[in-house]
Image (spheres, one colour):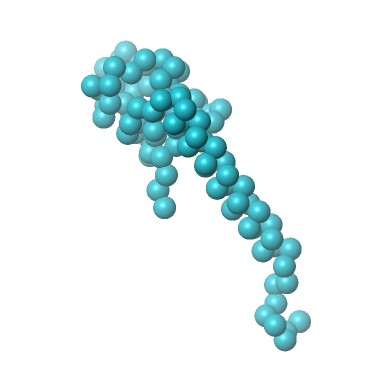
Length: 95
């Protein structure tokens, strides 16, 4: 499964590399913004990031909803792993 994760642009690099720095859930990431050259990106804008590329510009509400959904998925995954770890590890009838 491939996921795009929202990040907020914190710095646009003016070195000709078409990169920016973005805050992605508290982690600072260098992101290629070449695909959004027509979007007039500014510091503070939200973008959808996948494998280091900003694929789309998001509004703040859409970014917040996506982050909330991803956090919910992570919690469900963690809960499932904990449930599996606490259950019996042997097949029925075996000890």
